[in-house]
Length: 152
Image (cartoon, rainbow, N blue to C red; front, side, top):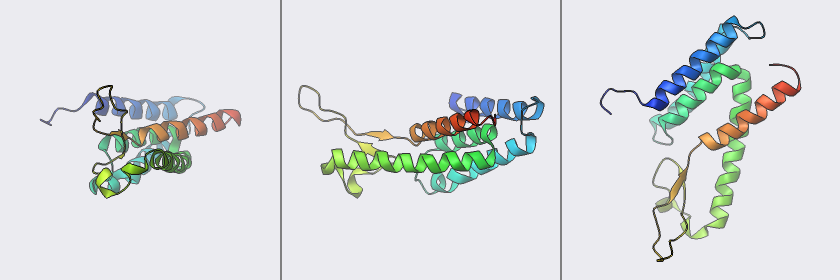
């Protein structure tokens, strides 16, 4: 990339900034330090897997932006739920496509699932399952829990 930041990076930065502003100015906000701590924890959680090639930088930025909104404690809960959901999705993918198991089938940073064959019978390159999908479900569960107990 030539020094230009992607639109996804700008969106994550905007989401982080809005979380920080909300928690600083809103009467129901938890304060700027909770937001900054959540941002730091979210960034740190997936930084090492990204550095080792086990995930994408988009997942790191998304988790950091969510941390600015949720705070460190709620982010850790959402991350734990997301890990369980991602493991379940991976198991379902492996059970549904046993011929794709093994290290050769997982050459990228995400679990690969084969796309259905076209009518001509040709198979396409497998599509990935990014961590953003289970992270969205885990975050939704935590936000629902917070709203139900009146904490947000």
